[in-house]
Image (cartoon, rainbow, N blue to C red; front, side, top):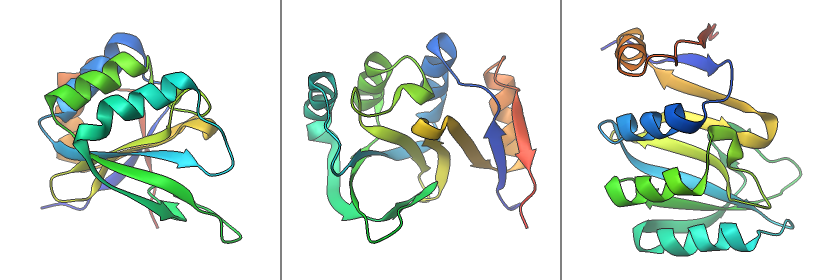
Length: 159
């Protein structure tokens, strides 16, 4: 099998494309994470999302690093890992309208989807308006065929 490559998302994936992407990911991913930054409040809408997702929670932990982010100076955040299945996917689809909508204080941050192997598939750092896929060329081809309009992914050189 070929090595995964990084494909940066050139523009926010929103609305129908956002929902279609999450639906497509159901065939590939089985877990996801959301982050609550310490010292920053979470609005009622974000707390309701966490409540709706609670039955899918695998674990909650204080961490200083997760895909796409490494906190400096000993800082930590609460990282929630959930099962990704049809019902939790529907909650994610109703809670946000785009990848970059996942930002405090309205919602938890940094939606990240993980493949069944445990490897990241889609990583977001919403407050930086940055997202990327860790996929092979073949997976890129399948993704762009299944989701027309998502082609604006830029292959990043990995050294």
